[in-house]
Amino acid sequence: MANIKFYKHEQIPLEMHKVKIVQELKLLPVDERLKKMTEAGFNTFQLHNGDIFLDMLTDSGVNAMSDNMQSAMLRADDAYAGSETFYRMKDKLTEIFGIKNCLPAHQGRACENILATRFVKPGNCVIMNYHFTTAKAHITRLGGHVEELVKDEGLVSKSDLPFKGNIDLKKLEKCIKDEGKENVSYIRLESGTNLIGGQPISYENMKEATKIAKKYGILTVLDASLLQDNLYFIKEREEKLKDKSVREITRMIADLFDIIYFSARKFGFARGGAILVRDDDLFHSMEDLIPMFEGFLTYGGMSVKEMEAMTVGFDESMDMNIISQGPQFIEYCVKKLDEYGVPVITPGGGLGAHLDASVICSHIPQEEYPAGALVCALYLCGGIRGMERGTLSEERNADGSERFASMELVRLAFPRRVFTLSQTEYVIDRVKWLYDHRDMIGGLKFVHEPKTLRFFTGILEPTSDWPQKLVEAYKKDFGEDN
Image (cartoon, rainbow, N blue to C red; front, side, top):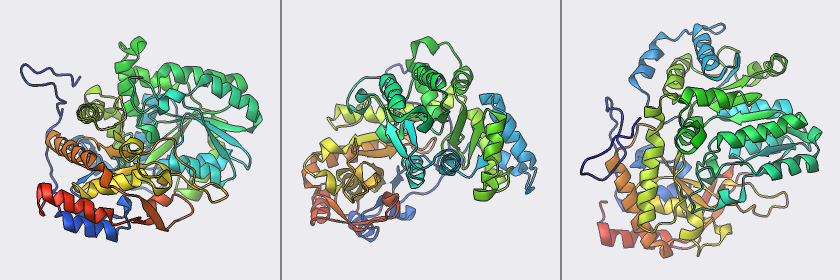
């Protein structure tokens, strides 16, 4: 394990890899960053990567590949149908999860589309511990609705609760009775709740939730996209499983579910996805959707080179030395920010460190997107690109009113094996400066607002000249070239 102790130095996370290939980074002068942010419509998704110093938008498809992953890409079998690459990937997934039926897809949201298309009808309900943006969008576009039943304490930003992603079991049973079991398409549990800080769900909670589902004959689905982080937390925090290996815990989790899907842009450290289906008849009822939406059944819209890399990445995801890297760096960042008094989600989860914009920007009304404003301010004051995870990431209600998010977060993702500790220290330093000047941050409003997933392509503008004033304050402390 990457739990190497230091003699005199303070305890810090230690990289269990060495750097073999590097990419040059550039930090634009602050006035240039203001220009780029304006051109991007105050939406960090619209920034060009060449204009960014540290890209912490996501860990999806931007993790560094290992040398073994890259070398595996050279053996890829380019056959349209029956590629040996697919069968190597399928065999590895069967080895890890114990499920032999595999439907390949080009990424996680493609899997969500297949599942929603197959199971969701108008008026149906899908129960979740917490939603993910695309998972919910696929369900609602088909006339279904989502019920989020994460425990209330999971939405408390500052706590020491080890598994804030747990579903409320009492609410789960009540929801099934209220909706009617025949109206529940499936129960989806997310192993690592993306939108509430990458917080994990315990094995015991998954076990009890799936037991309730079986009692009512309802299909169970695991979103395993962030599984590797969740496995780390289960092994570290769940006392009964400390002596189990990562592979043993993975199989125990898999045995609970009817269907498992994942984005390999996260789980597997490459770019792709898959749906694993336990029941043969259920599998055959879904397989025609892959050629329709994705590609043939043995490539599913993926590059075979990526599939070879994924297959190695799945093995690496079972290695505690590898999967500990993200959570340990995130915990270090969270701990330092917390010590500085910066409101941040605790304990540190997977995926990234999460700033609590509802506290940092409490002076900004929720309808002016405080998390969206904070993430733009962070780019101005450091060239750091994060992601808004708040009301801007929600969709409006049917009557056009805002659906206010439960939490207003700014996610600073830690792609695996990408950033160094000194870069992490730089992020901490700039976040602290911004927190000390938080009253200068103002709101945002839409200029162009797409109806669906508006946070991807929407164009906004500030409600005042606050960006210019913030940049002037920054230049007084750091100069024009920082």
